Image (cartoon, rainbow, N blue to C red; front, side, top):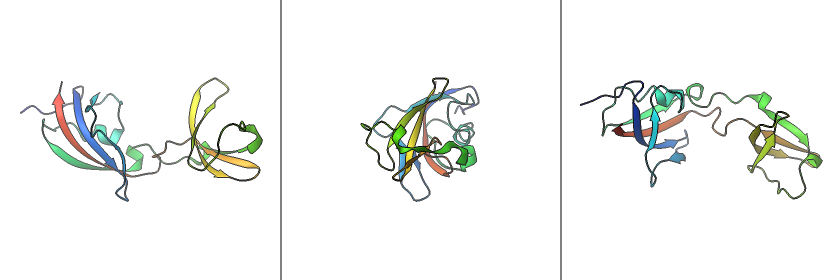
Length: 142
């Protein structure tokens, strides 16, 4: 059988879970994820797990946060005066908002803390600092 090598376009089904067993993403009920192995389109730890697999093969891959979305960077968390958030935006911990950099780039942020005077926003990827586990099945080599 043909084994996946870097540069191949593949399709996989996957389920991603956190250390507590909760699922954060899955292709269940959707088309398989298609990407080119070694292109940087997916997280590094998953990208290096695919070469050598054969169509129909399943495996479980444990990926340290450094090979996933990286460590959480404290510099990407910022407290802003509450009055700078428009009054029509409902504020609650966990809600996702969008900020715009001075250069016009849109950055997704999550609200991590709210006080009477400040709102603390976190621009880290929601999975930063998390070790991940993926159950993957190679569906096709295109």
